[in-house]
Length: 313
Image 1: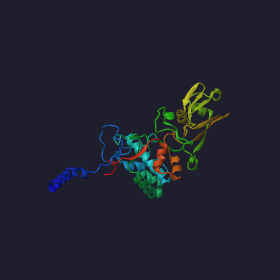
Image 2: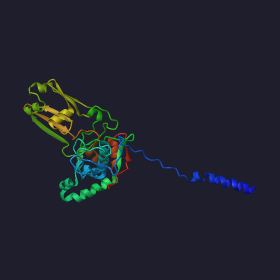
Image 3: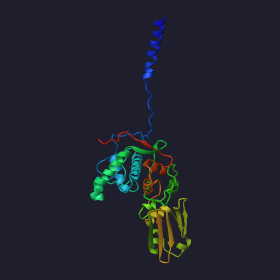
Image 4: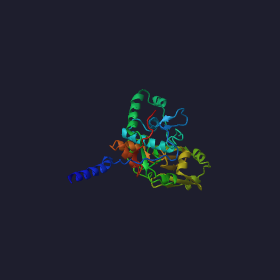
């Protein structure tokens, strides 16, 4: 009888042994997939228009951070910039499937030659600093509902960022207005003044100067105190159009008509949407880490790791 019981116990143990040996598979963090069915090449190489050779992703990110943000900034601000730059290029190029322009309309890129010329005797010091920053953030991206975001950024604000809806008319849930205080502590030339003769003013707007222009002038502003539109002598322009026509640094401007000229005062630099670079520097110097800087400027997003194909050959 005892032998039968032992036999039954042995059989039961052998039956359940495979299940006991199986370990629970860890849950994998979802990362965004490419925006098309194209295969991702390994490693990911970025084609920059005007640059002969394609550039490994992380080398490209270093070149963007060097071009887009002062290298003297706090490392946490530089880390935030590197994550934003990586996210932007992966989305814009569909993970390296398309080329990208190295312009302010996309992302400026500084080659190693450019960086040597820019930094001179400090090249190695600054290069080492950025290599450390890029290595610390390698593969990190910003996602909203597991999709890469359009990681817009700009230089300095007027105390708050602009919403995508105010800027383009298209509401984007993670590009909303947020506070960006105390930038004047770090941002040089955050406020500027421009003067235009009446002739220069009328030429910019392709209209003849008359005394009716200042009399009929009206301005409408957004809830972030940027100019939505202006109206003069029966015609209208958007704030973005005025910024382009007059070569202004931002759409936060005030206009004063004087007897012999027009004076325009501006605050901030850039379109105002997304991450303020000088705002990031303020937060970094206030002990805010890169991830939290990004989560402040891109609401409702997450920082995740994108691992495939990152290493250079």
